[in-house]
Length: 187
Image (cartoon, rainbow, N blue to C red; front, side, top):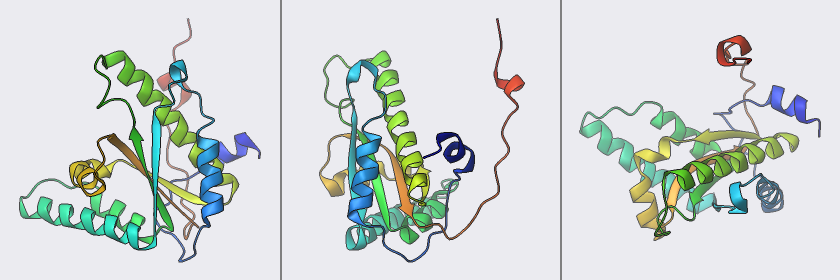
């Protein structure tokens, strides 16, 4: 894998082909995600993979939440687009923080450390998927229905993200990025 090329070519994919990604490939990608750096080696990430009918159930929960938001005239942002992407993807991985809801002395600094570690695992997952010629979409719109999802799963861990995975059915252009001088100071 050419890491620099993977970083430069990776795009957020919102449209997927109707083609199944094997469990073996998803397992390998997740195994690679667990190699991400982790503050204090806490490895706070937990993953649940959904495919086929279980993914359909997840999509139904999300659609119900979306419809409830619409009824109440609450803003939905890109929620509907994220639901459609999950629906089209071969699989979706829900990512959880294993510690935030359980540790008695959990504090702001542990939250920051664990959040960075989980973000590193997700980024590693995205780059590993890129090497397999897969498309991914890092999704935070699940926050619109995190309580409903966790209730459905009977899961007490904190849901922090979802990642849709599949064979891409689009080739998005590179999104604009701020110039290095805009985001960096040298001292």
